Image (cartoon, rainbow over all chains, first blue to last red; front, side, top):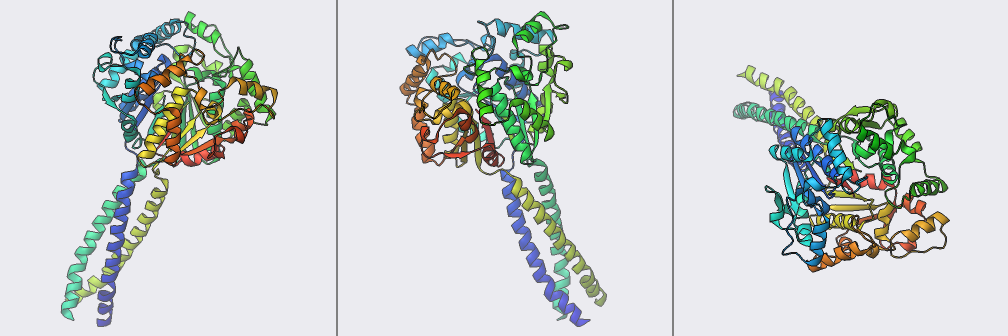
Length: 193
Length: 193
Length: 193
């Protein structure tokens, strides 16, 4: 009996210490994995300024936000047209002026990527959506805002194209590719649209 | 000796309880991480109806399925043309008719995104693929089906464009953006094509 | 007292064994999750051969590499134009020759996706970028190389288009969709551009 007790006492503490050590190791590894796993987050680059593609972006963005995801939309290049509210010509270089004049002045004048025919296609698509009670782009944009979707305007393309902050809708954040990547690297889903 | 036994008995149970508690905590955290980690799954939005892009979508989809991934393809907007089998005009509004008449009637008449020249480009690409023994789009679509790739037709764009179920190839699922997101949020890779 | 010792000795070992077993089980589950979690990695398909989109691809690629990510760019279809250095006509089929003659001969002659006007748009964009001290595409490509970005040329589209290795810039890897997927499935962010 005494020998048994002895055994219990001498083996258990070392097994226990081994267990505790293993547990600490597991905890460290688990903490690392927890830091690597994606958050409830969806990110997208909105590169296109076509009505159909921008619509797809906002349908996905509002859908994801409604499903509890943190959503970031990074508007760059032609995509900046979707978040413009009007066009100022002063303060722009010649090329910037030319580009501004040939680009849509706001979301309401975005063309469709196919069959646009100088805007007829875009009007047709909007009318078809209204017929089926589908939210318009502007309604989806308002919904996105309500749902807390983060909208970031790309500083670099804004600078290259000479688009001033005052030409853009309010409530935007401004950032570079690092802002997009910071969100995207933690996202379950990232899309380039 | 008795004191040692005493010590062993009085300290061990609390250390053991502490260990058990920590273990339960780790298990809970691990279970959460297990629920957050991506499945062996690939999802894509097929937004484009261009032959070259739809080909890319099916090459990636069949490749991923062959590598043991669950694959979902969500066909929306112009991408619906890739899963049409024919076009019915009756039962469509004027705009829906116009869009139907200007859209490809099936995968076989998809244009290429560049250098299409009224279908010459698409024929040229198909011929070039055949020359190099690359599977045609229709062969890739059949393979996708065999490999269990899930193909979902977007209900909203189907409704807006007035495309009836009978105009689409058989074996599709129907769903909205939530169907796409449900798969995409669990996917290792999601693409917008 | 003796009974207490007895109890301590008889219950502890089984609780300890239970703990050890649970720990082994947790470790196995954790190892599996560790294998499933995304690496510090970003992958992209560069399908487009448009200057604006290829620029976006390289801005994201170099940005991600600078943030410590392993980056893979898989150039396919029109995207191959971005990694061409010149065009050889001999050894190509008629269609391959036609496609080669109508495609850009190198990154320097890539068109923009909109408002290209036979290259004027691309020149304008390059000039606007220079005005704002934004790196040119060629500078970004050199930076990508320095940062260890992996550039893979798609074998299948190279074969279909009849593009020879000698027409491409040096330092590329060659591979199929499986190469892309192998990287993409382990990536935090995957994009189709």
